[in-house]
Length: 334
Ligand SMILES: [Mn+2]
Image 1 (spheres, rainbow, N blue to C red):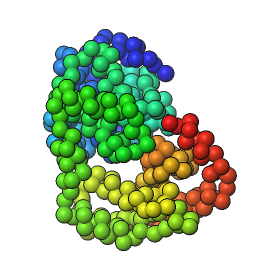
Image 2 (image 1 turned 180 degrees about the vertical axis):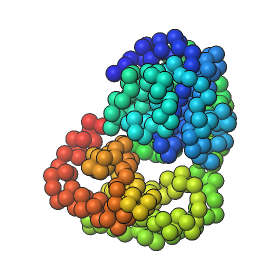
Image 3 (image 1 turned 135 degrees about the vertical axis):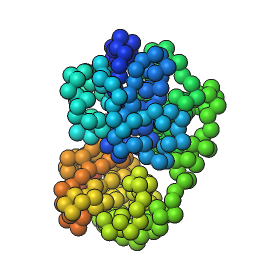
């Protein structure tokens, strides 16, 4: 584990940086990448912010995202991974690693595999954006409105706009400071991220909601999106990211699941939970991970089989000792 001073030393010492984030980037991935990238650039460094598939449409309102490129534009002295739990999910071309440059891993996933040469990982942080903010302040980097908006977006999206259990006093203090100092607009950011859907994406949600089912005496809710539906309603995958939250909004439901058929033998599963269940542990059974309240995994099986496998695991979970220690787990986590 690498302390703040060592990381700041590396940021000060080197000049050419490549920044990357996790596959299917969310608001925290894009926000923390952008905040650190812009701050390093302002400090006179050469920075390549890289997202091979491009920035998801809903985050393109952030000023500076136009500087994020699909491929690296320089040979790095340092590679920085943001909000990424493991090396396999890091969205950077393999050629980048041929440079032999050291990797700094900045993240907050409990399941982080510590794949970096320097690992700056704090599971207690609500968002990677919070860790980046701490680094920028500690290193005396100049913040501006663009950077403030990026950090705010990172923290706001990873806390479900200040609703999830990771919404701490620290998070409110950080957000309040950014709003007061840089004059950013929380309502505008919320609108851009949550209230700018396409017609097709709402129609698709309607179709997906019609697959909604309960299991385990109403403690589990799941729904599924077939490839057929995705062809019928061609919307960017990130516009389906929040669909899973409908499952967990049902009274009495503890675990919410959303299955996406991404290939004939490949199903992505999004997991959500309320207070009782640590879904990162359950997703880990399928090689996935994430946080206690939000996790993900990919199962190499057709949609129907993947659903069966996950529901079977949950049956075992609820039948076994899994629930006994939840109150304890909850206390440890806060
Ligand atoms: Mn995050």
